[in-house]
Structure formats: C-alpha cells, structure tokens
Image 1 (cartoon, rainbow, N blue to C red):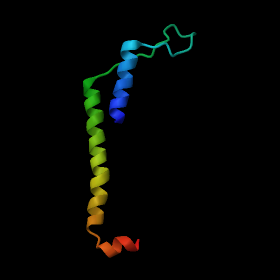
Image 2: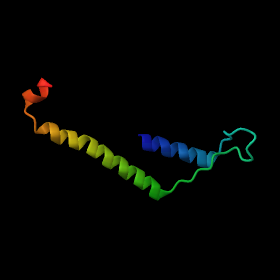
Image 3: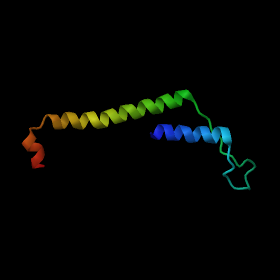
Image 4: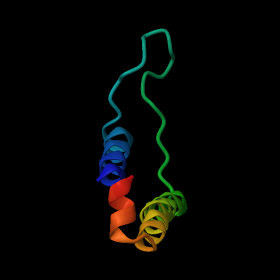
Length: 72
C-alpha cells in the first residue's frame, strides 16, 4: 500500500507540478524523476525484508514446544 501511495504521489507531482516552494526560488515546483529500475529495486527489497522479518522468527518459534513459548 505504501509503495502505491508513494508512486501515486510522485506521479501527481510529476504531471500536475503544484507550486509548493516559497516565492524566492526561481522555480517553485519540486523536480520528480521516476525510474522503473529504482521502483523494481525498492519493491524487491521490501519483499525480501518483509519475508525475512516474518520467516526468521517463525522458524525460531516453530522449534519451541508449546509450553516453552507460553512460559515466556
């Protein structure tokens, strides 16, 4: 969801170019560049981190007996 929200915001800033910076800048828009390779790297890294963050604890706790995990 965060990836899609970020991509949507970047596309909005790229195509509509709202004037959000103060007047003393010569250009009041924010420059936006969207590269498919960067998107793929970010999405792939997010999947790997999420998988490892759920797989490693699951493997550790699957080796415990039920009464050991309740005992704390």
